[in-house]
Length: 286
Ligand code: NAP
Image 1 (spheres, rainbow, N blue to C red):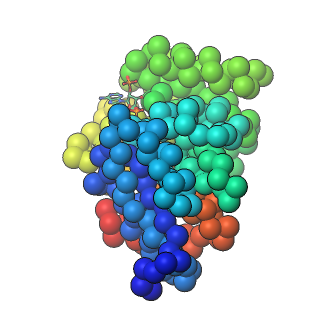
Image 2 (tube, rainbow, N blue to C red; image 1 turned 90 degrees about the vertical axis):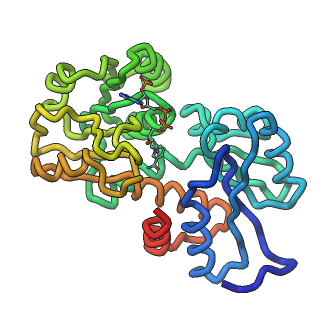
């Protein structure tokens, strides 16, 4: 990588904590491959200092940053504008500092999710999806699917959270078939055989609890299903193994992680991101 000098542009990831992020490895590898004099840094920002962190980007000449847990909502009030997509999802994961000094909040999770599906040849338009979970990631996934006309059932352990997500989606997509249910073996047994796509947005199966899965052991998974697990650590989750063993197509969260990162990289640099390099770097960092 070329030396840091007076022309080096800086971006990073703002979160608390940020020690375990793979984003610096992924983005710096992409800058090196593209021959760009840019660096991507971890930016640990305490929850009491989110406003100072956002305004610091402009003061210190950053081109922007990614935003991760727990700041994706908190940064919103400190920005000059927020895209309609980020507004609808209710979270910002990327900030772009424009040349006029305005700071714009974007959300690239929905784009990253749709691009992962497209790269595997799955066209979600007009299909039926079951989404397990109703947290922040579920909001981006549900918005992405709704925006291309997928009918969606949200199943969550805490039913009220699924209900509130469906109410928000229905206000944006009033004609789309949507419903909320409790996440139980019985509702999965009832709903999943009617679906084309099953998405896990719960944190079940995430390291270190790698032997857990949102899909119950005793239930058969339909082989015609496409199963997308957003968990990316480990790269191959128990749910993905269950899907493969059932003959279903299994997709993992690493692809979405890379494509949401690539979309942010493209916003900052204005260039096409070297996605393959980013996949290799993210895998190595994990
Ligand atoms: P979050 O807002 O905290 O939501 C967590 C979700 O998991 C909630 O629906 C929660 O249900 C459910 N859950 C947690 N423990 C559970 C359990 N024991 N049984 C059943 N449900 C449980 O988190 P998030 O930001 O949405 O992230 C969720 C996962 O997605 C994480 O693994 C994260 O790494 C991954 N993710 C991946 C990407 C990517 O690019 N691949 C992007 C974003 C997130 P309750 O509402 O009942 O608590």
